Length: 246
Image 1: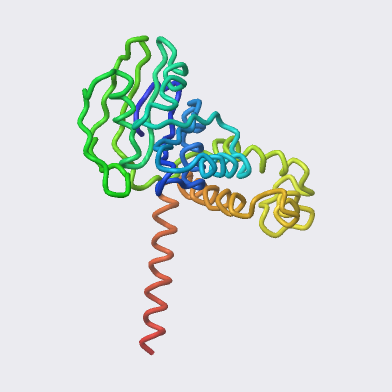
Image 2: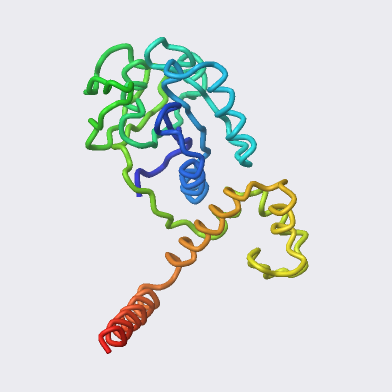
């Protein structure tokens, strides 16, 4: 739980060292679970060339992500006007992303002053973790924006429906599978596996889909079922250690 009553989520990554397609997938699943419209924001465009930026945008689209993408630089202001145009009066937005990607600096640029603390960037151009709490700001156009601390880890607590919504390309392929309960792992006649084999579906995206789906299924287990599973694993480890001692 990050915040409540959010309409839009700006999922922020730096174009530099922070860029990670699989992490985008995780954030998109989180947004879909909360019925929040996601917008991808690539910051620090001034640290890479135009060709490098185009390559990252192409990689996002080729991975199957169709969400709106905004690129900007807090240093030279490129893209900030487009960011402002996305803010609608009466709507609530939040900024999500790792530490140091420029979330708080975006807010300072929007309000026109250094209202919130930031730290100088490192020698590589990356920011330093500063924000330690959530805070809501009402902007001039009466849109509300919530800054959040940088996330070091991002687990999946989402339902299977949120996973399917986030991977709608795989969901569409699955409709043609031979079996309605296909796991898309080893079944004959699986359209998803065929797409991976012929290259029309990225193997990395497919593997991330299976990984997130497995995490989601685990978290959907009841507390007692989790305890039972953990205890069974504990007994297995204890038995294995006993066998090794022999």
